[in-house]
Image (tube, rainbow, N blue to C red):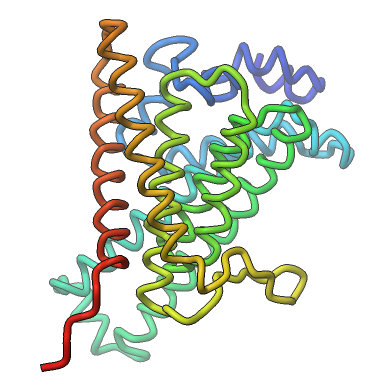
Length: 304
């Protein structure tokens, strides 16, 4: 039924037949439309490669042989997004495995080191594959963002910006992270009727923005935060403003978190385990942003 719906161009019908991940409401609220779907179990279990393969197959069915305008149908935005997020997970898993292998080389890895090309060539191949996954993930999530914006769904577009910012952080591209977190904050600010989870993600973007500004300052204190636009640098934040912006966003994140917690307490809201985990993770992010901002504001130690 899924294949027939996709090939027939009935995207809305496909969203009902297919995994919950294809439903835009599920994408934004993460409230499953139906429980325990295999794709949902893959995501929760961290099996990102299997999820990516499944989503690639569904996306192929949805767009194979279709005209360009069909491939850019906003109804496909959740598919592009989830496929991109799955590839982000694949790239992160591969990077983590590579770090573990470097810390404690396996017997197989040691044997490879003695073969032609040695361990260095194997590392180069892994790095290139990880970079390819990350690049494709970026393209997919960016495509999803464009389609969400076309559909007027700014909260979903903000989630895309948040994912892209996280990918930039993984690659230590602080200027790109600042630009994407800034867009995420902007989109969330413009969105209406944010639910609890959206508000958590909004504040996560604010805290992430503070941390990314601090990381940029730590590496290049005299440099503007600038991104490449059509081959030319475009300043996002001037060097003289980085520390102040970092502190301001850290304060905003802390105030927002305290306000949200106060509202939940006043309403005696009942939170499930996932919501509690999200709030705990946000508290850690806000604490980190405050530490970064405090570090930038601290006076330099006097020379000995």
